[in-house]
Image (tube, rainbow, N blue to C red; front, side, top):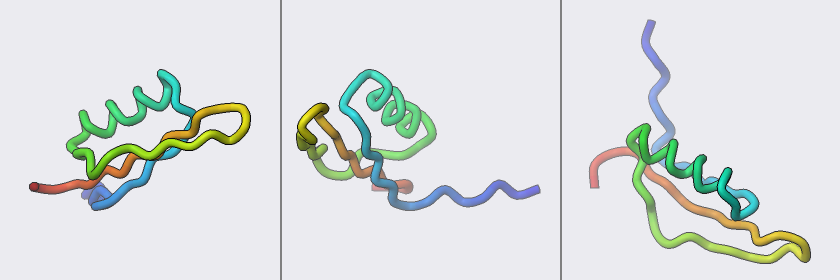
Length: 58
């Protein structure tokens, strides 16, 4: 059975904590690479981070 092709672009968002960093690290381990700088905002309670990742050669 063929595995589905990875998405070429992903935008990961979430509370800026260790779990968010673990999600990004797992994507990097799968072969994604960072695309641009992270973005952060504050929702009144938590810092929310966003990081784009892309699949494929540079």
